[in-house]
Image (cartoon, rainbow, N blue to C red; front, side, top):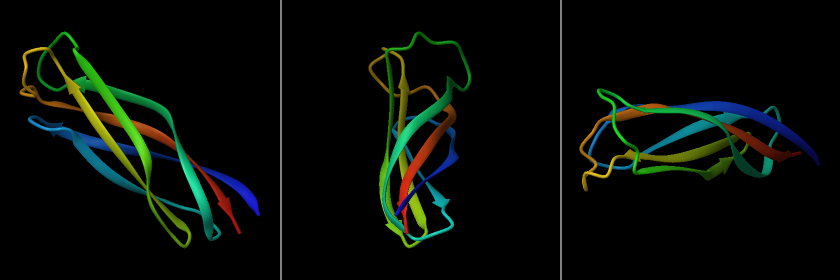
Length: 102
């Protein structure tokens, strides 16, 4: 068994009213036996205006593994303290997938 690494970027369109969730696919050259994910970087922001930040949440995890492909789910939330998630926010999250391959 060998260890392999791949990076990918998950993009988030402007959204309001909910936590965003996106899945990205990372393809390896060999069958993946198991994998994990690490946050590599991010660029997150309110879309339309300047706001005081109350909460930031980025959660990256392995969604599933199918042969040579690892699917990574990233959940993302950015909100101010108004009590609602009423301001549009967008951005990108970079992840590193670490896999044990055959």
